[in-house]
Image (cartoon, rainbow, N blue to C red; front, side, top):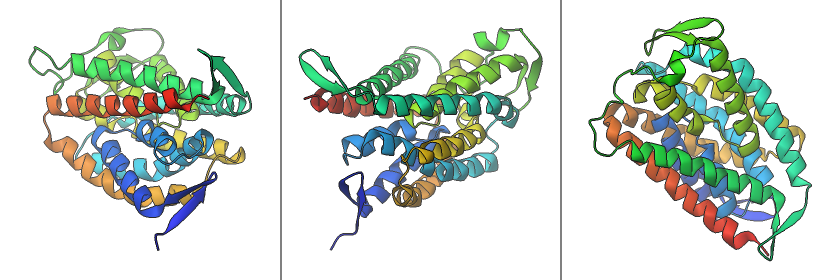
Length: 300
């Protein structure tokens, strides 16, 4: 007899949830992200778990996954803690706004599109996933063609040259004179994505750090995780108050993801930057295909 959980009216095998958690944790550890961009849609597409529960429960397990990943990245000297602390206030404000949007969409009913009826929540959330992940994947894949790999080194991107407000140095990167207000605004945007999509925001933060600010890819992978832990924790509370968190589901996923995050963080230290960004782009594109299929077949 196979062990299973009843989640949102669906019977879900525990063994497969552990496997999913391990894979998500591996990706999270490798790229310094929470893995929510992968976990939330797969919980819905593969296991049929309702989106609000997938979002809230995904954020809950992300707290453990991110904590495991940050310990490993700190051990190998990857990440800029000062950037995390500057992001934190905006992140906490943004995650509350994102959770409120999900609650409103969940009771908004359905809308007709091309002669079919779609739940507004599914249409907005999955559509946002597709747009976001396609944009990030195309950026990472396109940058890997036809030139020497520069992502091993700090470059000083266009956002790093913005000079409004107080400025701070980021010695671990290293970058000098980065706008503290800009970093806080980045945190606000990442927090909103976390609360709305059930992601830590790292999937959107990575291109901002690498191409906007000029972080080396390994430092980008280890940056943002501290803020991610805080936003995931607050997002968990916000969604739990709305009945969107299944604690048993989160704990089962956490068993696999905590182990996977350790192996993923070690792989970041070993793979060349070109391979890292191509793998990242491939994972994003695979997720887009899964979400797109669910969106196309989900209408009535």
